[in-house]
Length: 601
Image 1 (cartoon, rainbow, N blue to C red):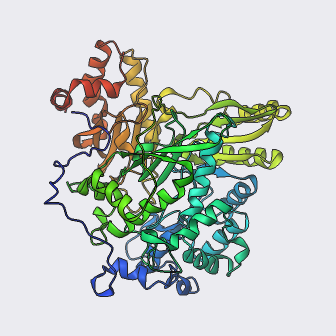
Image 2 (spheres, helix red, strand yellow):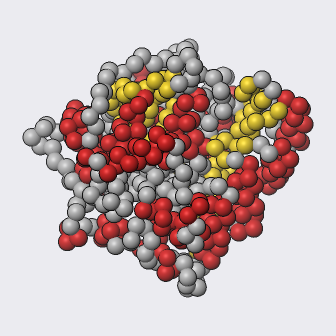
Image 3 (cartoon, rainbow, N blue to C red):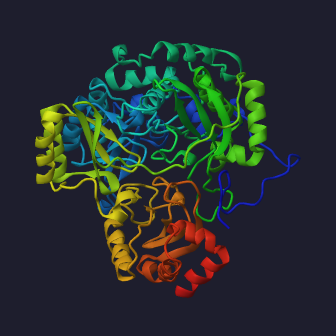
């Protein structure tokens, strides 16, 4: 049985109203968990991080590491360099905050130079439309973040128990609702930016230079002023929306336009579909709540979930709505159990009706109407050449797994530097070179061809939408490979499809652990690390990312991938291939699919 919108995998049915319980935000120190107390004692995410930046140790303490996440960085060690009896090869991963994936030329050039001089020589486009840098030493972290800030970038709230990077379609189209969606994403990022923590961020990384403070537009400024009112107010005047302990866990928002599902809308805590009028002015949004991918192996209480529809809200109330939803999660999200802390669990446990009633009763006083009709969504990728407006173009360049290195990285730097091109990153880990003048187009095309990018509009069909997380050797959560072996996995699958004379493609996603950074639970074929060279096999998502896949095998050895799925591929071909592979699996039914995959093991 396929899992529809708002449902979860591996869960019992929702509890009755009498059985439901929830953990409201804990206010007293005596009752706080160790992690919650750490946030409360941090002076708005500053201590002990500030002191440890001054010492000569190669790494941060556990407490400082947890606060460092709010500033956009994770502490990692290179597992392949571990040696018994020696200190770990400590280094920092750093992630940008870049709403809608926009990276201006100056910021990109600064990141590129920092990656070469103080990182591991690569940049990586993430599935959340941001660049990551790897290999930064603790002693260089202040210089790296300070340079990013002075180059008009930010890493604040790229990680941590806070609203993360806000996604939107990366394409810089100047038609339809695209400009409104991009602007809304940028404004929401400012609305939900922490206020007191912003001061701590600037204190730590640019010595308190307040000229780099977020300068919100007038509507955003007015919305932030309303954080001091009603149920949205945390009770903390310095951090009015978040309070001194911020959120129970991370929080994710995405905006798109009707029909464009490049942002994986149903995997977000808040998903907004922006409707614009004929002049491109925002009229309102369909709102979806409670999506999320993260889970833990062998923990049935954790699961992937797609968002529930909440309703349609007029444009003038959208800022108040997102603040209200975040505040409700702040107050009712589970602060005792971090595995149960996301908004998806609150809505699953309490129900969407309770959520909507609580929202309207205490946090949001404006109308929530029925959803507006949307066209069938499509996973857009914007690869190849596209016209922005008269005399202006962009080109979408495929980056398998998002990794930029070597000749391609050097060549892109030269193009950006020569023509001052803006870069935009897609949720599919691809890169758009934007604002190319008609007179520059031929030269850019020639330069890309010299870098091996001759036909960016036609990458290998399996690689086109396949994504993977970084996994080994740097991610501390990875149990096996993902990014480094995805090209080989795709080559093997491609050979299998050719041998079976199947011309249609399959949406493949791969992660080295169950946390879901590459959103594998929405794929037609998802591989989720469950041991060394072993993976859970998830099947039955859709090419347009509208339905959850389901787990069929645990600890499948990767060498058995082809033999395991061959009966399904043959059946799909025999059925005429009219449906997508994911739809074929869903139509076949769980029992039949289980019999086929287990017969091949």
